Amino acid sequence: MIKIILFDLGGVLVELTGVPIMLRWTNHRYDEESLWKAWLNSPAVRSFEIGDSTAEQFSDAFIREMDLPVGKDEFIQQFKEWPKGLFPGVLSLMESLKGKYTLACLSNSNVLHWPILMKNMGLENMFQYHFASHLIHKLKPDRESFEYVLKQMECKASSVLFLDDNDINVKSAQKIGMTAYRVAGPGDIAHAFEQVGIC
Image 1 (tube, helix red, strand yellow):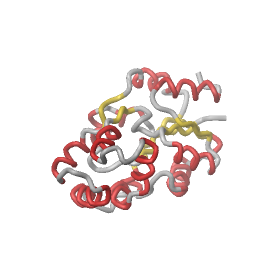
Image 2 (spheres, rainbow, N blue to C red):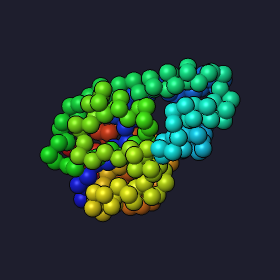
Image 3 (cartoon, rainbow, N blue to C red):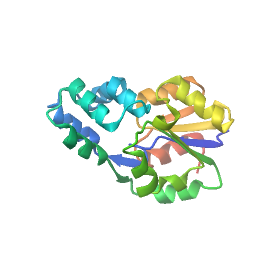
Image 4 (cartoon, one colour):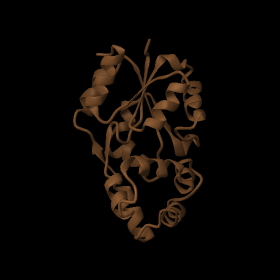
């Protein structure tokens, strides 16, 4: 029985602009799926989103890794703007779940994006639990990130519905025993809810 809904943020509740920008910067050497794999496997990204490097160190290293035709300042400015805003319908969706389920978020995030997501977009008030990779020092899809969440919430994996826009994270959650779906926005979320009997 699902008691907890664990949300990824970017691409699930929050619209992102980063993929088109990265495809342009890399001169379309990647398609969207391979770009996400490169992002998740990037040493620069992992170091930054686990809280082990500064924004400046991250931008320098990532520009070198991906051979991007931009300078550090431009990269950081554009990167800050990747979270565009909440998908339409997110506020009403989250309001409809309050009091019925424990709501939590598990996001690979960083010092530049997290304040925007929590404060500017108001996501801080939508969840009872907040798990950001740079604060817990653990990243999806690593198993330990999901184990950490379960330990902190003192719950069983079988009681959790996990929603993420990246298939590799969904599969990792499923391996630990969570019910998990790949979704992108409230429409997909509603469909996932139907699958597990949430209305």
